[in-house]
Length: 82
Image (cartoon, rainbow, N blue to C red):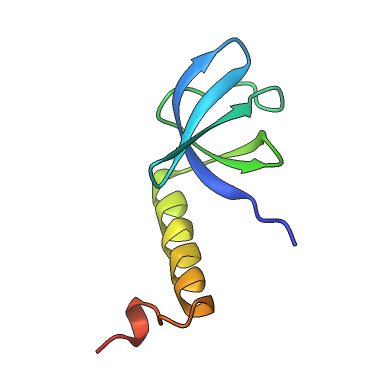
């Protein structure tokens, strides 16, 4: 299974972006997007930014991914803590 992860663009040089996902920096190609800018959130799959998304959707998706990871590791998520 592959996941497309929301990432924030922190810098752009030529057709490559530096992206940040929860403090982890990577590079992603912008060849598939025409209008990506620094501080935009994009969906990245297999090293390519494939779609721009708004900040709220990106942050909600990242929160759900963290919750799923916590559940998979047996720690529970925020919704299960009391």
